[in-house]
Structure formats: structure tokens, C-alpha cells
Length: 197
Ligand SMILES: CC(C)(COP(=O)(O)OP(=O)(O)OC[C@H]1O[C@@H](n2cnc3c(N)ncnc32)[C@H](O)[C@@H]1OP(=O)(O)O)[C@@H](O)C(=O)NCCC(=O)NCCS
Image (tube, rainbow, N blue to C red; front, side):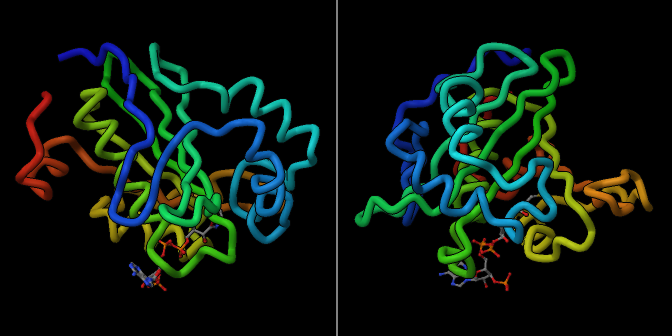
């Protein structure tokens, strides 16, 4: 089956969270964590300014669906009940032919250590495998980003590669760990899920 498109119904509910598109009303909450150097240390962007946040909200983060390869869907991670924005998660659709995607996640440090990133990322795997029909979803991280490696391992993703000094990243050589999960592995972990592939 070739992926067609992904048009989720919002909000997407998990045990403790609501995932939904970001809006201009989130600008302040996004700035509160995306402008922090410690949050940005291992991610491919620099600490963001209000202007960069506003520009992203108008462009990449305005997407509410995936209609073709090369696109990404970023969703806000809201704590159900309080409405606080704890962070954001992203699903990239890399290839229609190979049915490939990738996940990423960023949390406000105040909301770390509660399992929110894992819970939100699992919802993005579910969207990718069950609704978009992807075959393979990857996660790529800097080896020094141990909390992120623990998220991917908790999700059940397999480490497939360790690329030593793969990129000159923010002025230092970065050793990249590549994780992946196949749709068969997802459905084996979640036997109640309907097969979509
Ligand atoms: C990567 C990042 C999202 C990980 O955040 P995190 O809070 O460690 O991950 P989770 O939200 O899944 O929380 C998991 C932790 O909460 C703990 N926890 C506490 N209560 C919990 C609960 N009720 N349910 C589940 N986990 C719980 C878990 O034991 C786990 O701790 P451990 O990793 O020390 O064992 C965060 O460090 C971050 O935003 N970093 C900056 C951006 C970044 O690097 N993103 C990744 C780019 S590749």
C-alpha cells in the first residue's frame, strides 16, 4: 500500500495529553523553551527569537495534514486539563515510494521527567504507521543526548547504526545514533491496532 495522506482529527488524545496544531496563541509558550540554549544543544536549530517563532507558525507549523512526501507535521503537546503547552512533536514524511518517516520531539524542561515526550512520540508513531501507512519510521540523535536515546528505546525503536563523528554540528563533531521501527514491529507491540499495511 502506498501512503496517500494523513489528515488527523484534532485534538489527538493520549492518556494525559492533547496533541493539536500550533497557533499564534502558542507563540509565548513556544518561545519559553525554544529560546533556551540547553534545549537546543542537540537539535538542528539555534535558540529561537520571537521573529523566528512567528515565521515558523506562519509556514512549517501551520500544516495540519501531510499530503505529500517532503512535508512535516508539527503538533503542540498540551497537558490535558491544564491546557499548558509542554512541548511539541513532529512527524516527517520522507518518502512516498519507500513509505519512510521520522519523528522528533522537544519539551519545555519544566515538563521533563514525566513521560510526556514518550507518550506524545508514541502517538506520532501511531499516526505514521496506522493512519499514513508508513513502513519504517526513524529517529536520529546525537549520542550525547541520553534522555532522547531513552525516549526512543522506551518506544521500542531499535538502534541500527552509530555514525562516528558523522557531522560537524554546532562546532563539534557529532556521533549520530540511528534508531528505527518497522510497521510489523509496531503492530506486534500493539496487537489491538488495526493493520493498515
Ligand atoms: C529529549 C527530551 C524530550 C526527553 O525528555 P524526557 O522528559 O526525558 O522524556 P519523557 O518526557 O519521555 O520522560 C521520561 C522520563 O520520565 C520519567 N517518568 C516519571 N514519571 C513518569 C510517568 N508517569 N510516566 C512515564 N515516565 C515517567 C521516566 O522514568 C523517564 O525518566 P528517565 O529517562 O530518567 O528514565 C528532552 O530532554 C528535550 O526536550 N530535550 C531537548 C530537545 C531534544 O534534544 N530533543 C530531541 C532531539 S533528537
